[in-house]
Image 1 (tube, helix red, strand yellow):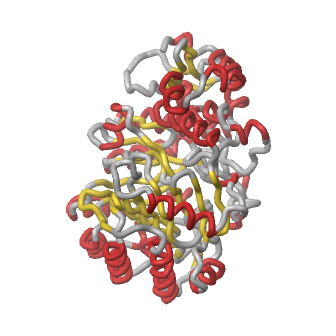
Image 2: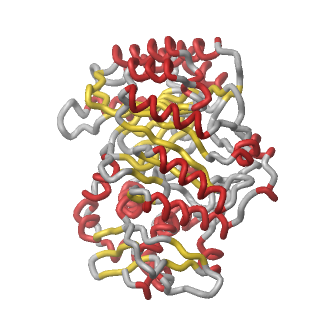
Image 3: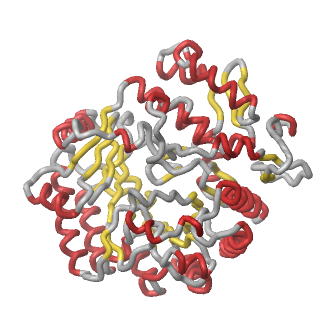
Length: 488
């Protein structure tokens, strides 16, 4: 990309951003205030397409059973998609004000044991629709706070998964960890249970920010846990960060970035805070006046990318970074990157079974979501019903658009012929209006249209969600996007 392409909409007063290829050059990408105002709108993160807000109640347990049985009928051949499992543990001992996850704040640890009993019943309901002991290559425990459960409870439940499924020895088995809930002994126990990957929720190391979001955890504590994780033999450690939190500034967040980089986690996920207090009650404790605005948020993002690259990380896309020899970086270089409900992944397109309150499953061309409240979820399972309350059956058009959007999100480029061969369409004819809309993105320096496809520029990667939205038929039909976070 030439500097002229990057600066197509430059004006005085714009922000600068680093080159995403890590090259140290005097010419830096420019963001004009006009471009920021135009692009910093709400939009999906595209961990799925169609997005979860499109799920409907016409899809229920009966449709999910049909999808599971169809998978069973596909047999065990090479054409069957690999299987991944997500387990949602909704409990937390205290509330973090920024959190938009499905959670239950309680210190009553007996709730964890009761919940695991219901989870075990759900597993049996699901397995009853499958054939034999399915091979599982990936397991992820999320929350809430999975480490709310005791080591004995986690060990027992992981053993149950081993008993019900054929867990592959070379698989990825990860768990989200609140640093305030673990010590050396607990990390050792998690490794012995079978987890080989950790994800520490850090968000920010600045004390004022931590107090503003009700999550205080010193840098020294996380540093010690990172060192212990390596000594204990975990294959990979991820750190989660959030920019756009109350009391944050570009300068304060730069300090956090340098501290995180000094810890050398294998991967970093850095999300933009979505302030939606009308939907998420804990966020009402955050004062609007304390939140950084669009220009500051973009300054945090661009500075973070600059500093992570300077510290040897590769920018994977949108919100992920990884060390050069991490499998995520390798997948990005080889064009094998994927995206799922956990973000960017090396795991190829797979079927996903979601277990627990609010979990989402992906089986074949369907999505299905469990009941969102603990009482409703428990009632479903105790009646012997798979606890699906809504979902979505993808049409041929949905599957086509999903492949286009995921190519944009993962690779930043699209070759028309590859889509035409896979989906038996004429790309230029099918997406004539979308391609016309892309011309505006080209004029703004976000992408380059070519005779055989298009490719994002370095500037365009910052607004990849905006480009992907051009192919989202639901967003195109419904311009109301308040339910989504902002692109920056």
